[in-house]
Image (cartoon, rainbow, N blue to C red; front, side, top):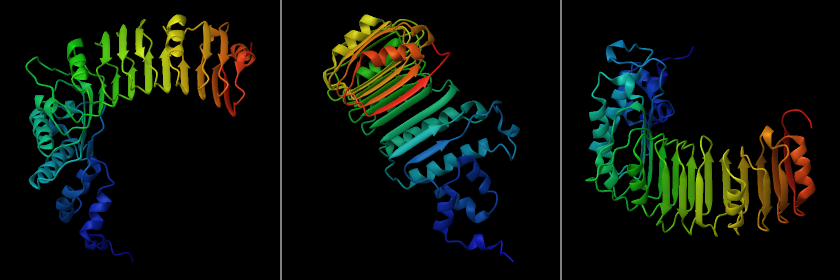
Amino acid sequence: MVDRRRSWHLPDEVVIRILSFLPVEEIARAKLVSKPWQKLSEFCFVPPLTFECPSRSRPIYDSRQATDTDGYPSSINLIDSTLKLHFQKNLILSTLRLRLDLCRIKSLDSHSLLDSWIDGALERKVGHLDLCFPYSSYSIPAQVFAARTITDLCLENFRLEIHENINIDLPALRKLRLIQIQSDQQAIQRLVSSCPSIRDLEISSCHDLQTLYVSGFADLHRLSVLYCDRLKRIEIDVRTLRYLRHHHGESPCVMILTSGEFIEELILWNSYLADDLFHYLVSGLPNLERLEINHTRLKTIQILNHRLKRLDITLTMKQKNSIFKIDTPNLRSLKYTGRRMPFDSIMSSLNASSLHETEISFIGYND
């Protein structure tokens, strides 16, 4: 017969290890099982600290509406008590990731809670800060923009306000991601331009952005501009750039690339990409090794590059009569998705004596 009490006699470190694999909501429920676990569960989070409570279709506006099966308010309480214990120990915090649906805890003073959590993390010299609060009016504290220890900052799905009197000083920042941010043009541009030490920059689904200037970076290696539907113009002047990814589709967008001599990877998903702009971009990249073009309207695709090693092409149904000229003698991998007729044209024009790998996917009816 199995002794069901045996689990209560497990060493504390074993119980903590077991609980550490559970999501926040499950730990909140586990606290109700055993009084010893109520204290041990507070220590299940060690640096890095990640708290992610999934959203539900129906918001909870009052904690009294929460049931034992919901667990969201108790999860917030667990996060609060865990962080307070961590802060009391005055430990250096490497990572804090908060991804919470604040609409479900409106009866709590969620904004004050978040302020205290973020302030505590900044005081403990947090290096990686990842914040996501969907459908929230919360504005992050101004201290975040003057945190001298942050190396990786991700802001997602809330409104960003940076007033003129706010000092932006992020000297250690190496990676910046702005995702689904509601903000005016000036705030996003000012934040980006005030972080000259960035190596990796991603701006995604920021629909208020109309122009973007990327310059003045001493060591920027990766740039991704994705799904910013109102973006009309991008100007890039970065000599150190090695990776450039642009997804765009709702309206025409002009890209001016002043220097691309070190770019090794170029990924373009742009239904408004014009032939002349494409040729201008590709011809100015002497060290290009990977090229991906997807869902464009290109009628003439000319790629002349002796360093290119990987080529991914996805054509739409309207590109069956596109003209190709591909001279890439060192190409090793070709991936094609589209109709059969353009593929035949590609193969007939292809100069790729080093080709080792091909992946072909035909769509639609055979031509």
